[in-house]
Structure formats: structure tokens, C-alpha cells
Image 1: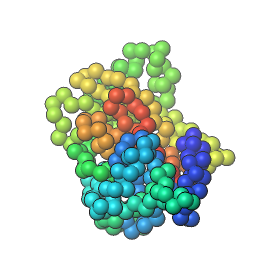
Image 2 (image 1 turned 180 degrees about the vertical axis):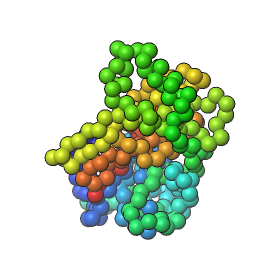
Image 3 (image 1 turned 45 degrees about the vertical axis):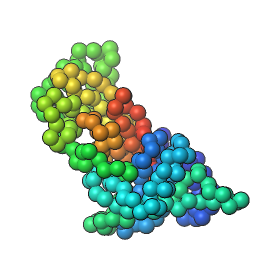
Length: 259
């Protein structure tokens, strides 16, 4: 489970110099994408990437005063990146402490966002309940292969499915369908999440992309096309957020976690 996968990363993060009290971490395999807490929350998030050069790019971008953009809303923010030091005094590129400043959130609830170094082509998506015609087509697609989808159909809640597309999609643009599935609970680990299954409709044909571990909180543009990225939340003791992309197949792009 994500909470268990994040635990060793958080221990590593808090071993960094000047890390006292920092317990949130953004981990991304895509350069330029990172999670941070929203203003007025100035608690740094430790950002990590698979490639040290991507971390250096983020630090340089922020500390030159360049803007970053919330992908959930396309809103412009300023960022700051604190580069840690090794015991010898060299820059430590295991992670940097990132904060952002911009529009102040309106609620008392602490909130995060996914940020990019460049503005999204699609800042907002058309998210609505599945069209009746698409629901019927999806059901027929599932019923056409009982060996593959027989067990899955008993879990799916088609009436609660959601449809996601660009707000002004071109004729024939792909439509992403997200369908709630089974609920997974582990009381001992303070964990509860509802799996969601992802399908893509392309000119009347359907493809099953796979399952994400929790409930999509938002849909974001990470690929510049008509397939959204999914920011997914699982119920755990803290924050258990993951980012999933659909281009080229369903795959995890990043995580955000901590307390």
C-alpha cells in the first residue's frame, strides 16, 4: 500500500540537514512536476525526482524568481527551493525543500496542489456523470468479454461513473471514464480506499486502462493532449496522494505523502 511505500522515503527525507519538522514529500518521475502546500501554508515539502538534473532544474527555476503553475486551476504562483548541504558543505541533491506563494485558499482546511514549471494547456476539465449512451456502450464492452471482465463487472458501480474530457474537445476527441469499484479497508493500518477503474472511449471503441488505488480528487493536464492525469487520494494516517498518467498506458507518475 502507498502508505507503507512512503514510510521509508519519509524517514530518508527527515535525515536531510535542516529537515526538522518537515514531514511531507513529493516524489516525481516527471521533470517539472511537484506537489506543494497552498498559501498560507508555508510548511516546506521535500521534492524529489528520479534524476538529479530535474531537481537542479526546479531549484534554479524557483530561485531565479520564475513562476510555477497549479495544474488544478492554472493559477500562477511563486516558488522557493531550499537546497540542503552535506556534512562537507556541498549541495545535497537528494531533495530540496519547496514552498509556494500565491492566492490564499478560502477554506480553513489545509490543501495541496500539483505544480508545473509551465502553464497547462487545459487548466480545467469537463467532468460530469457518464452519458447514458456511453454507459450502455461501456456495459456492452464489458459483457463482450466475460472471461476478462466477469469478476470486474460485479465490482463496478456504473451508475456512479464519471466522464472526463477537455472542455472544448474537438469532434472525435477521446473521453476518459472513471468507474468506482470495491472498497479496501485495513483498520490496523488506518487505511480505507475505493479502487477506481479507468477506461478510454476513442471514436466509439473502448479500452480498459487499469485501476487506480483510490478516488480521483482532480484531473490535470500533464501530457498536453486529451487524456487527463489523475490525482488520486487514499484514506490513510496522513496524506496518501498519487499522480497517474494515461498517455501510453496507465502508469504512476508521482506521489505526495506525509503528516
